[in-house]
Length: 444
Image (cartoon, rainbow, N blue to C red; front, side, top):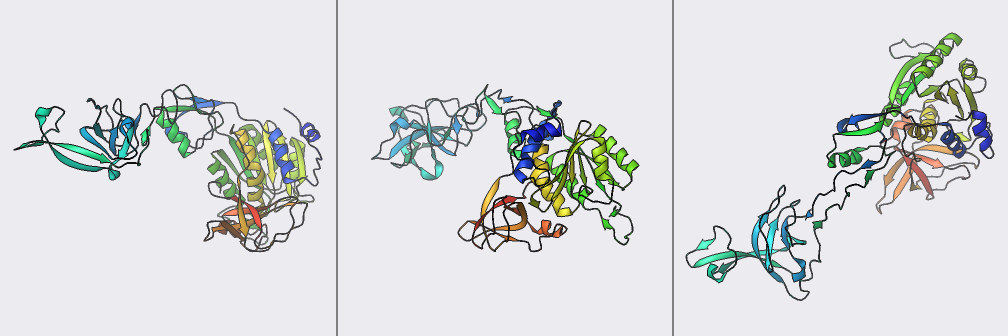
């Protein structure tokens, strides 16, 4: 486990008083380590968890060649480019069981979606593209007769006509193992089990799956000016919103959240809170008390109890941040303003926590959108502006800001559906310029 000083020494141009957003993420990638404990959970309980080992498929999916459509299965070697194909229907293959008959040249089988392809047949014509008609047929001439189709003059048979130049060999057939092959990895270790992955696990017939244990994160707000819900308003005080937004962010991420409430600016209370959090959690998140000159004890207590660095990040909003370790727990000391808390969480803490969960972490994807307005910016810092992204008539994305970008305007985070990311070296943006956007869906 490397110390803060050792990690800092490895980073080129490390300056705790003017750290770029990219440098913060590079630092955190070296600071955090994934939890090692694992457990088996039922598939219904696996949503959001991180796969501990490669998941090897015990079966092939699908387990047999089957039809992708309702239609008629036949041998494609009979297709001719210049003439329709007439085939006698000799039976029906239903999903869930193998058809027991056989089909030879000039014959086809009516087939339902998902039904096993009969032996010797490799292509399906969808029923809406086929013409079906009954034709008189003298059973004495040989060949199968459709059951129950007798007439006074003999019998009738069902004939399916397939137009020319409609199909190629193998059309509308799903091959055995087309999705997954038996004995091959279906999911790799580090995969976060989102709804599609949970469904894939179930498709293998597995009742349980091995995952990393949930990450335990302790969180508390600091400051004498913070009111808990239910307290009477008082002059100079504000109700604590940060606990609830951080609780939501951590819960959405799949963490086990340890809510430690509001801790007053008293050394004994702060020391006890940090000590308890370090014993109970893998990570500690606080808000408030990390700026230079704060009239409280949070910063001093962090330094006393752990190996902690205090940064001034070249960003807006959210300039001050503390990071390090207290005991074995990783510490994230976030600024106090509500929007700054959420932005620093999304930009830095969330990717770090994903790594601690054992996930194959990646920074949030950035989408391109046209700015609907000018945005003033100086190179030398990264700015995260709250944006409202819409789709234009031509299908491209456009974005406008929510207006007031103050770090205390929490309502703007409700109005926004993403953050406009103006990068460190980027200058002012003109209306019509393309910008990067980090979307909120699935995160906030």
